[in-house]
Image 1 (tube, rainbow, N blue to C red):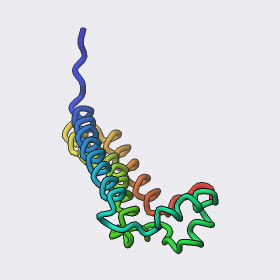
Image 2 (image 1 turned 135 degrees about the vertical axis):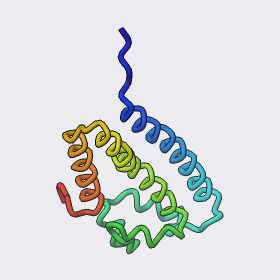
Image 3 (image 1 turned 45 degrees about the vertical axis):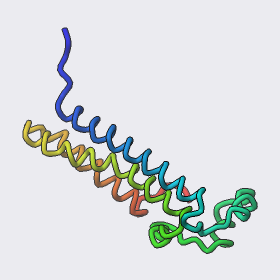
Image 4 (image 1 turned 180 degrees about the horizontal axis):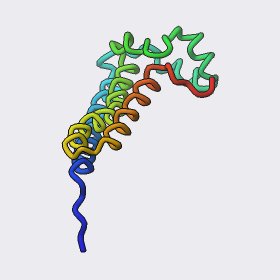
Length: 135
């Protein structure tokens, strides 16, 4: 007996699949921009090797890179442009959950609706920096 895959799983999987393909294409494009030199990087290539030897705190102190969401102000530099596509990939999960909430509601599946909403809230809080673990 073959079981039918629930509609919400198909929707979630399709968004994740096509979004991942788009994200990988964007990563390839932004990496090509970075290595080609079409757009200048914030940190010169020669300095990167030296900075790799040190911890993050040293990197931030030496380069004066903004922390948190401050990197958004730096997307005019090729080395930060890549972060934009990584953020796109990270947001895909939230988009998937948003897309399946109406399906859960139409099925009157309120438990899964609440779980999806809770997941969205937790992911958004984590991305905002409000929820932090560790340092």
